[in-house]
Length: 306
Image (cartoon, rainbow, N blue to C red; front, side, top):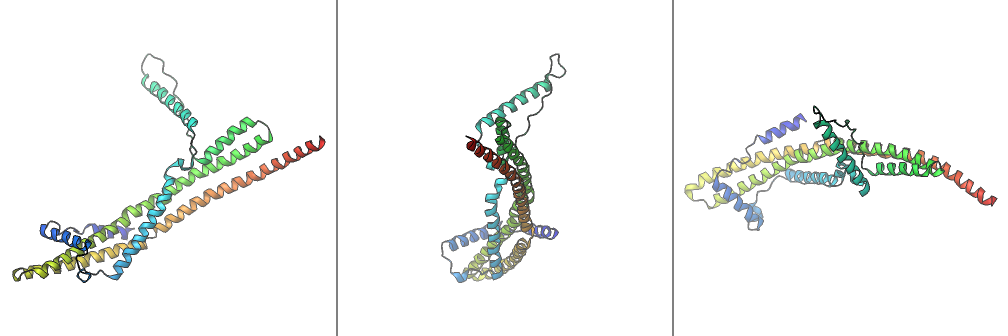
């Protein structure tokens, strides 16, 4: 990372807009860009950039698109409720509890030191995670109390316990993905790749300045020939310098191992979550199957006796 920071520092130290203050050059550069966009400049009058540079441009574009494509989906892990079923009644109940706790806390705090009796310090409401595993676990727990000591109740109790484990694993998975994948993945996109893209933009501007200077040289009169020629030479040197910097930065982006390390963290977090879920449900399924077989046997025996 020190090497990368050094590259980034060197790039930021370049005066990318060193000719921008010269109004004439800025105007000619804008005019050059417009003419090229309108197809009014012959292909052989546009300076060709090195093939290595163009190849690196394509690879960096692909890498940037890779980051954007995966982030578009995996950003869902930033919000806990991405798979939570809508529970309007539950939300209203929670809202009432939260408001009641807030009022009581306010009163307890502001009545201190007065002659009025202050209410007891309230216990904050327990945090209820809003994920599908938590919702299933709470529903199964509620259903267990309704079923009583029936076999279905014992099955539901086991089922609810499994989903409590899965729910805990789900929270841990999301936290691991946010810290180990999303944050560094976004950092690579917004810093390393972004710096390389700025370097490429600097190359584009420098190339336009060079081609604009060449056009000025072609039409310059004898008195301005020498100044125009020097302008072209300076523009050529500037383009070479900026191209070399951009190539170095793009190579650094492409050689950076962080994206693969981040992807590995994503896979590890998901694997641990699904392995925990598989283990918990596998155990539950065996126990529920035993209850199911016993219930079926009792039912068949009762029919036979009838």
